[in-house]
Length: 158
Image (tube, rainbow, N blue to C red; front, top):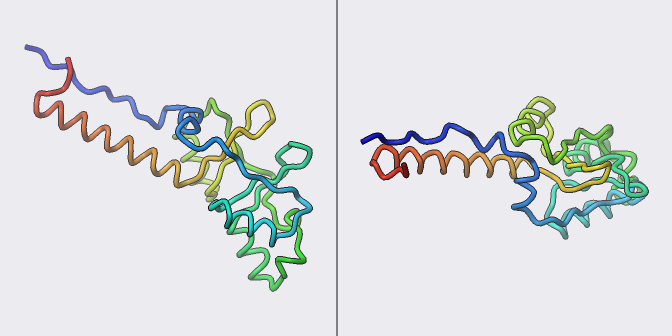
């Protein structure tokens, strides 16, 4: 009797579109001329840590809680009097739906960023957070462990 070995493919080679399919499709955004206070209120209401900054439907920046901490609080500025365009991160590092989860992980690690907007045909299709990537890796590891356990116990499908 010959037992098939578990597949060695990893979910890190899956595309960003696979990850987005598992998420809520809603993408919250803000205009560059909005106040930082408005951005913070929106992030708090929506339970997100970043907002893409859109002008005429085009991605022009991203504003994060980190931007607020470093560019407003630490500089003694007032969030009510500071515009998003003054603190947003630009140019924006982004990915496409065809890129892999592994590529997202590499970009986030090398550039020390926590959020990657996903652009498709120049329009924002979603956002991938470091939490999304970590959850994907955890699910991948759990699946690998299940496959290996089944293989070792002889219950792996032929």
